Amino acid sequence: MEYILKNKYLKVKIASLGAELQEIIDQDNINRMHKPNKLSWNRVSPILFPQISKTRDLLYKVDNKEYHMPAHGFFRNMEHQAINYSDDKILFCLKDNEETLKLYPYHFEFYVQYELIENKLKVSFNIINTDNKIMYYMIGGHPGFEIPLYNNEKYEDYSVVFEKKETSRAMQVIDGYLANVYKPYLNNENTINLNHDLFNPDAIVLTDLQSKYVDLVSKNHQKKIRFYFSDFKILAIWSLQQDNATFVCFEPWNGIQKDFVVEHEKMGILSLDSKQSSNYSYIIEIIN
Image (cartoon, rainbow, N blue to C red; front, top):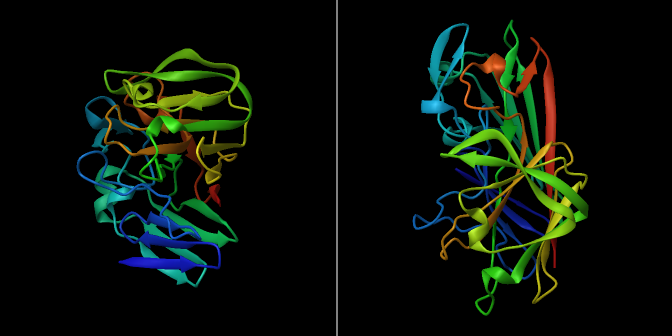
């Protein structure tokens, strides 16, 4: 099922499958989100839970029992119930069930809220551990933004501009897996000029950032997207190394594996005590 939020600035479409953002239409009737297609990437803005990336052979252990976890978790592939819906706000809920317990041996409640605030869309996550033991998890966003916006533009006309000049490290992707290996990326710089070769072999996974937001800008016009991610410690920037990949993703992450370990307790991930909760949010500002 699809739901619509709107105000005088924006119109937003959200699907109940994965509680996934589908469109943000600006005042010029331009959709600023990626248009999914099977030739490049068939998603728009999946939510990553309880896994980011993947473990070796998609396996991990809890209490000496082995489980299979899909890459980026199961959250994006499940139907979510809308429990509160108005013109400018919607709240979804997913609770553990027979299907999730086969993949992830914890009782939980996960609430996703989308809220329009003038020309901004705030996306909020509330995770509750309803189990009687510590719950381990990772959480991330994955919104993909359409570039170029106009037919007379090229992908290379766009740049990512950080709030501050950055000296950062990039976590490396080795054989399709995130590794606890880092290389310098950005040296007192605030701009990444986009091209598809940047994404060979995969995402640019940045740590040690001082900025609280990044801008997606074109050299041809004033339309831009400002993406706020201050609740998250890692920002990945991703697209595909192919010319028909007309998008770039900003992925705010909390929790991530270190090396290729498969035991949750040894991952560089997050934990919640029994009956406790955690909250995270990011904001997409549409600037015309």
